[in-house]
Length: 141
Image (cartoon, rainbow, N blue to C red; front, side):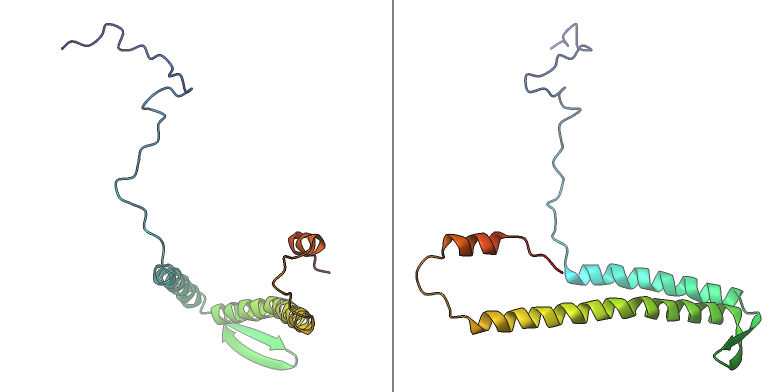
């Protein structure tokens, strides 16, 4: 069997695609759903790499640095002092986040106790206002 004379000419297909070059190929293997253990493994590897980089940082910055804080005078290796300052900074950032989480938990608990005081709906269908209230986006204030 011989090839057609105009094999280099491609006519567009009726559906708007140019042919096999633009069609999506199916994967050779089916997609596997990610698991928590797999995610934990990725986090552990990234954490180990970060710890290794921190160790290199501390070892390369071994010069002594005089640190004074609230009247306390300490001579620490420079890498340790900088790492300690970074940890204190992270903890200072975490404080407002922790306060916000506590505030949201208190609000959720209060709204749960308020809704528990209402009588449970009977076997009848919910009213139109109840459905509209349930579908309305929740606003935090």
